[in-house]
Length: 606
Image 1 (tube, rainbow, N blue to C red):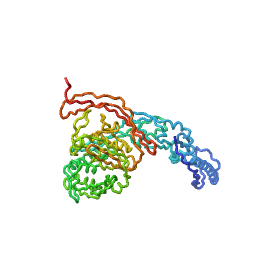
Image 2 (tube, helix red, strand yellow; image 1 turned 90 degrees about the vertical axis):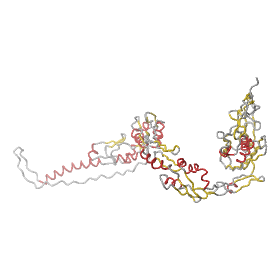
Image 3 (cartoon, helix red, strand yellow; image 1 turned 180 degrees about the horizontal axis):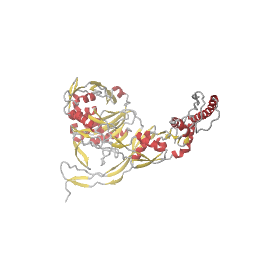
Image 4 (tube, rainbow, N blue to C red; image 1 turned 180 degrees about the vertical axis):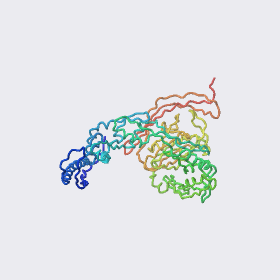
């Protein structure tokens, strides 16, 4: 613990005490006066010169004494009789006073290092003074002692005590006190304005009780050296935005803002911004002091307008890559035009309080594709790193096969940049009728039932294996509840919108291309990039905990799908990755498959 500062004591610069001579006033000419009736007979009068000499002798002695006392009283930089923490600093130079005070602090070091007992709102804890930077500033304390007010008489016979100058790290102290307080603080209720539809909802501000860092520091500095328990007060704090100001924001902005649409005009036409869109994009944000500030969130505005922006904007198109003749081929993208959002939010905010003239002008600016042909060509996508194929039945005429082909075409040609994570749900979005998917069997609540998008799990398994054998990082996947022999055990994945997803991360320094293809009976996914590993293989452990299927009879009908049943089991699979002839990674994947019941469409035989 540092108890005090380590600044070099000041040099001895004591001033020389000077005494000013005093001239006594003249008594006037000498006269002879007869004694009064009650006075004794006087002796012969001394001549005036003799009396003056005598007076001069007496006065000189007294003055010498006074002058000597004055010189003593004003000796040194610190007034006589001045002490700090019991150390007598009076009559000393600043340098001597500095040394004396440091010596006294050294004698008290053990006491001053003892933990402080601090109470905050009824909670008590001990705080180490060194942890919060408590120390005596010696130079500042000596300066305060030297500046102590002491008139001449007080310097001769009086005394005074000067409090030490104590410093503390306010931020560290506040952090320590917050730990003592825990969750007992009664925070301010921040003002808020939100919308329910187009109706403003208001939260009124309310004061709270909280620590005030500077006030806490003042109390702790005052009580530290006393060695007694310290009570730190909580201070009532009020949000900056008052209830009156909140009401004004509601009446002058929040309500008028959604009273009518705003017209957004551009050189390529105009777009109406309806009240519902305004309500979604107009935000009232409170900072930590409770000051409420309105703004227009342009990202929310664009999202709420959706396809309406297509009438005035032209999206930029990224460069693409495909496999042609067994080699990657790049096709350049094209620039687009998009609203300049730099001032759009402020421009909208300015017209929202108005009843008339609710128009803003938007500027269209050129936008370049995120992925240019030059950038795409430099990503190191040059060779096939892995490929994986699974088989299906029914030909391309079946709904299930059509779903596999639909999702394969959606993912084909996707480029994943280095360090980025690919999400299959995020890429395709919802896979419903509107997106071209059909009804086909899906597993729901442990049994096969008709459902839109059936078959997409087979594509997911194929994609998972392609990334698995490319050595890419598995982020999220979930195998099926039952094992189907068209899939490799454990190394497979299902998908379901929106709850079950498949994600992998491109954990290489190169870009990668997902290339898909299909026939009437197969789906193939290949990963193109720069090959890093010698080989990626799977080693299986034995199957264990084998269970047999139950026989279950279901009501016959369109929703009943009969199955033969499949055994359940647990199995381990190890991904073994080699580079430079040595194993560099060995990853364990484990899954427990339930036994798929044997479903029979019909009643039990009697």
